[in-house]
Length: 137
Image 1: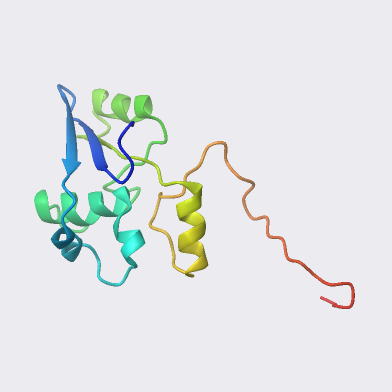
Image 2: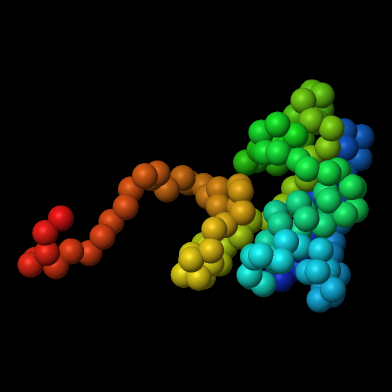
């Protein structure tokens, strides 16, 4: 999705029509987001979708990933799930930047589910550590 920097905008497709939702920047909106996360994490579109749109606007109650919420990497895949009756509605969110991921990781905070799906995929399970020549493992 193309949006302005720092703008929270969502695409919504219900099988008949496509809609655009945008969130006005109002500090009080962050009162609805889980209080145990940093201010930076509260601004992730996936967090706003989960904690504000789902819980407070749509009043969906508890939703679980891969049970109630299906994840699709591509817009066409999400739209097709709705068209074929595999999902009721598709919400399209903006990705977070790699820079933001680094900033959150440096704060030792866990990132929300599905917020770090990058393409092309990085090699999973690879960890590198700087070891000086005098150190032993």
